[in-house]
Image 1 (cartoon, rainbow, N blue to C red):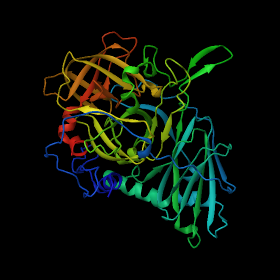
Image 2 (tube, rainbow, N blue to C red):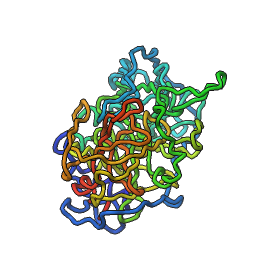
Image 3 (cartoon, rainbow, N blue to C red):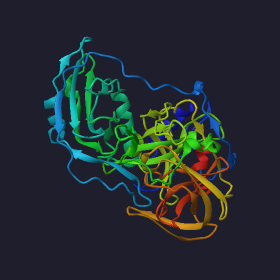
Length: 495
């Protein structure tokens, strides 16, 4: 049994004790052939406390499946007017993720009966049934449909595409959706959020949902509603755009602050910058968010895609299921406004392995292999990150192209997190957090969950802080990787 099968099996059967608690009961495991699921106990001795980076070769990567061309049925249409409410401020409170979209109610498809009345089933060439509905949230940069599933045949085929002729699309099966929702409920409990499957964002204000049922499966076996969609008011595809008529560069709502440093200029960090991905995901409040995460290596060196971020970003399996990761999301060259042509998205989410607010840590196993050339970052759990030490960070502030920051650790901190953000005070060498000040660059909303590095190895994860381009003396707090490693991460990364 391979790492993907083993870890998915572990994720499916882990159940959290309370909603915001550590998933400590979900044993490790995640690599190697010939073993059994379950991993080791948190009291076991790790194989190593320090590990170098590893680059994913093309032979270990898999290309994302393309949506096959097909004759499309005539879709029922549902159009929401432009969203008129004030946008969420694009300055996230320290210790909170950056919101990029809002939920909008869909009255016509609020119930399964309502959606059923809209679907016009026709017979497919293979004798099955096919129907589609096109939903528009006028003015959105992208949208995601929240499917509340009561009954979905495993043999159903679900396709998502755009009516504008774009080749952008996504396809999955009823079996895959049912398995994802089962994992959500096993970890999160039987909540509406756990029972909701969020469609991927295809980058437009319209998306068409097509449902195919094989011959012999009646439409009555389908019981799904779409009570909500997520309307993105930030352009995920183009954080910086050129105003050709004015001959100037105009920053959009997602652009980072002026003092941020372009990571494409930082060749000294060329290896580890390829470990960082921009994250977009759905919260349990049906809102759409940005954060940053980092791919980690493990002592088996088996390329298992362990992905580190913050608990205040992803703390539920439902959010992990909705995760999209954007790789190589940086400028094409130093200080360029052009996108890197290598940029690639992965849409199939992750299994949540561990999440705790104590160290504000979230460890996931991606369901889809990242593109070839990414780095699985090394890490250092020896506790060598200490006051006075030089550090640097790689992150996606405001969801913008990858940036870097350089500074030093000023002290240890005791921190606590709540719905309103993070609160910290000076601590001791036993404290779970590191307070960092920057000499160059800063962090912003969207940087949350990004890694702190020393010598190419991860030593911390961003929780929040007061640093900015305009406020002198601001600092940020990073949870200590060595403490999270000792508490549980070693069960996946060093066994």
